[in-house]
Image (cartoon, rainbow, N blue to C red; front, top):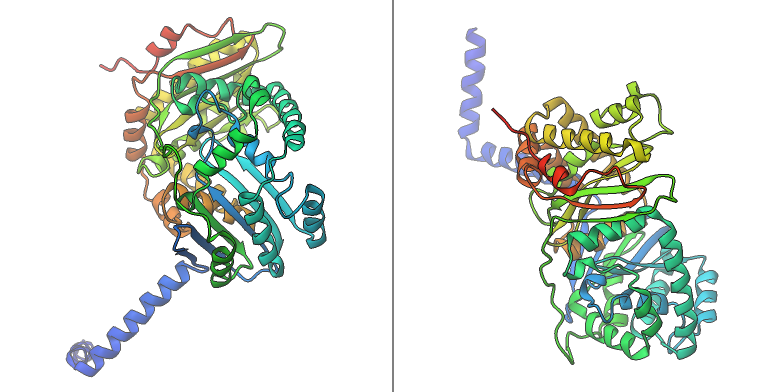
Length: 475
């Protein structure tokens, strides 16, 4: 005991020694710095060019890379007259430029062994290429060319008009896509988020080169562009490439400056009864949170608690969520999946299911029972399991350069910064059952839902009955 006291006194004296204290502080600082470095390997580097374009990269030195141009422009920025023009413009970007014909563009990409692709969403338009890391300069030059110098020839427009009309027919045969378009149309009626991405047939038949050029000039602006790269991409090199190829893009608007107008949510329904279809396709949703809202991750955990299921899965006993077990045991549906669709300032949180006509009412009743349970009695054990599932699925989605590049581009447009995986994991792990109950009570309890239903939906309960089941009478 005496020896222990002597040792503690010696340590106390050493700690008062200024030289020793300095060494201890240095060691502590070095440990903290090492921990910080280990958390951010590889780091996401961001540079803003003089014209406002942001360049962001995550370099882990692989032999391949994905580079892309993310533009803050989509169907949400359209109106009734030009709805569909953003998606039309995306198609036209690959039909030749002032420097390259369509065939030359395709041959250049093939010679590189690269892939060139694009997509349009309600809030973003994206052009990206997956290539060898040594070919990144060429890929960036091609992407910059198609974004800035699309030819927009009359013959190409007419040919692509037919392609888009055929694409619309394919989408109409995908009932899940149809239901979600109807869900947006009723939930955000009278606002730009009600617009479909492809647009109405009448608009596609009438859009011309002037419409496309006006949209290009009014929306493809430097402050709304992010150049992202992941994989074998040197940040400094990509900054130079962006300056060289995209530095001339400005922020000058010749007409009215497009702004992001708020989109109000309306509790309502759309029913498209078609008894020739064998199954009913139904979506039930409430208003969720936007990307930057602090409740977003909690809503994601709650969505994971609802889960997903279809008849090809194992027996009911193997299912972790209550709704999956009930659906399997009582054969309530063919499949269901929860969703949490986020936009900048709003979102849709709910469930989509496919069911036999006679099972619709029972399925809706069980869904609403589960909704209310999430509001008042979800347990810590369930939340821990959901957090683990959400964390795993989130991180597993970032296992390719294309996925990471998309994550970087989307987050910079939505958040203004990249949310590193360790921060995202920490935020998810901080959520408790109490948080889930509070957030569910806020967004779900006694709220007016939006409903979209297609198929033999005669047995879907009346809207007022569904609305009256959005709360429990508590004594």
